[in-house]
Image (cartoon, rainbow, N blue to C red):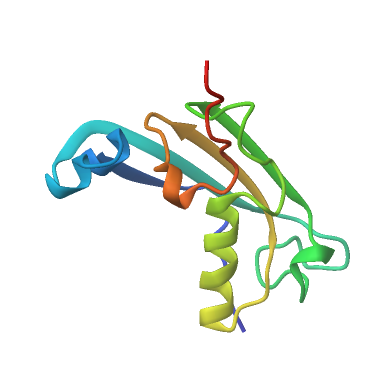
Length: 125
């Protein structure tokens, strides 16, 4: 049985020069910008408060995503969100049930366009 931490967990992710755009990825430099992601398990219907299990499928559990900073108002705030999809992959790899989640994203750097399906190319002027 999977046991999730009670309370929020925050991960700080440093930006790299690859976040600046094409060609900068060859430099491989860490920048003084960090994205902060805070996740917290929230109760789902029929669970024991969401801390020791959760529902068997992602479609059956509550999800709340907020984004501030770079990409706010542009990135999806539902199950298409890249960080949430990454978390789902991690739960699947562990064989853990998907809990209800509250995810708060504080973005200081842009996601590279090649890995951001939510971004649209700029229109020519």
